[in-house]
Figure 1 (cartoon, rainbow, N blue to C red):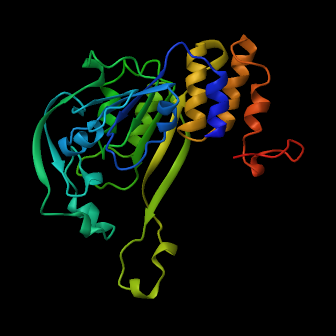
Figure 2 (cartoon, rainbow, N blue to C red; figure 1 turned 90 degrees about the horizontal axis):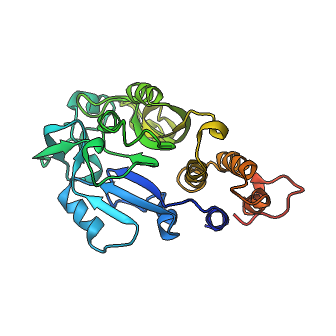
Length: 294
């Protein structure tokens, strides 16, 4: 929070950053919450599950707009509502693939198929141009990208769930998303995390499960615009990328890179890097830098 406060106090974009969250189920505090609290970001969230959507809008808050819509390529579809909210998807679970990694417990006879109509980001007039896209919708990420070419044309970052081992029938995998994002002008910046599972075997009572998780399952990946920031980015884009790098996906080195470009333009104070680094944790600072305040 202290690190973020240095940036929000020094950078003055012409408008709040527009964050699009597709799959904005209220299962946890989103990583961009601090930007909303500081008034420098506004989230446009999508949640087609009516029960989860009701939780999102139960207490209206500033800087938050939500839509009870499913985003994907346009058409009549089925939402497979799982009793565990995090497994709800436009794709049905693949029993063979799930059993292959010993996760039969994910299969349920209480999955409710709900017919709905999917929409694309580009066809929603009430959705403005997007600066940062966050996606977690259990297999539907590729459709969001392909239906949002215009709305994403100026975006600086995409944070998306990626799958390495198929869980849902017909869902795109990491390579499919990676190819699409690169075609749209983004590059892989980092993995926030990857999750692995243990392959099933007849000797599970003889091993420590957490020490034998060798099969990659999924994770969250961060993509950033592949561009010459100094030549092609506006001041606002540099500020949005700096704020997202600091708060949404914890890349303070990228934030400093953007700050350098802003200082060269006279759009940020020259002492901002020193003030920002002073809030880094101790192990992130050179020994002669002084104490960090994390």
